[in-house]
Length: 490
Image (cartoon, rainbow, N blue to C red; front, side, top):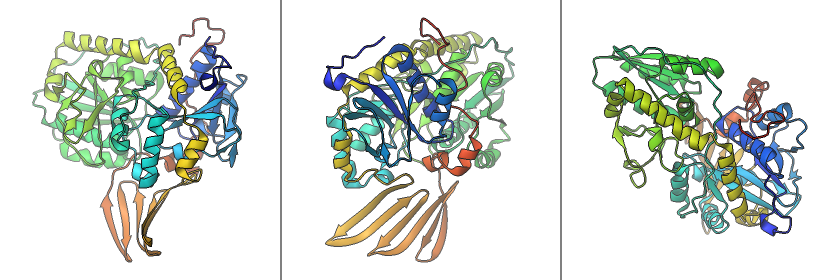
């Protein structure tokens, strides 16, 4: 057990609250839930959840840990009743949504797990500059991996301390073995959500596979669902004379393990999906994490076992794969040629597995990283409130209001959900509405439309429609630790 002295002031933590108010299941909610389980198993620190009453974290905790003394805070309350000497862990895009707290002796840890945050939508420019200084001087930032670190550092223009809390993934035991690989075909398997920047990454992979010269039959298995499934099916039509596409939808559990084991020559993914391949001893390549929302064409990639600082994907800069830290970058064609040799394919699968096992499958290691991050932050609600001037900053559904002044307000933009309105001297001159796949503009009464790619955003994950769809869905179906377990291992 980790015991923190009650007399160590800032280092003493009574309870850790996880802010994750949404209804939909996702990798973030699962990861937060596993961190909660680590605290329950290995420490004497209490656990708290800030969520909707029927949100994904709340209902999962009620189901799996009904008697664990978890404190629940309804996100919609105007004032959050939290324990003194606590710490709130907040995802990168929700820091401005913290509400008034009942106790001032509460610290905040700002956790970055995304690489494609629209900071200009979340904060006004002047607020963003103040926030950058505040986060830097309070050591309030922790990062999932190198990609989220470099993007945050560039956006905030600060060299933050490299404090990492790597992603944890628990693989279910599987007895499935790889079928005999057909010598006349190559099977590339994509596993991941089909929306936003992940869809853009998949298009880059398809383009590389299309240009790959081989006499073998080329097959892409696409596993996953999302808002861009139909759009992706339309976009791949032009490649179908050279590649066979199999859209398999959402597969989970043993069905997913079986399909991957039987059909994968090489996996390609980012985030948790990379670890799913690795846990099955399958070779997996990291897809790119684009810095901007437009199409790109990059031909160099990396294997999972060559990743840097816990990355699960290949971070990019304006020139391609970030060259500063990433070594052993190879051409896509060369990587496919390598795994055509069965012995090499198995060796790469084993190396991916060892990388996963040594880092991302060890909850004690990752939990220790969490404790380090919790100990270092000195960010408080009062400091944050002075930065934002009002809390919550933008409210539950609205985001930032940007006002530009020359003596008096001249130009103002108001962001709310998927709509943006533009005002000149108080008169609305244009509005933009984001609809799946495109932007709809109205400028001085004239309507325009343009294609648009965007990630599955927060309003969708917290909508009434999503609430009804996910009412019987949980962040996970099993506890990480069995009741009465002695060694704390999954």
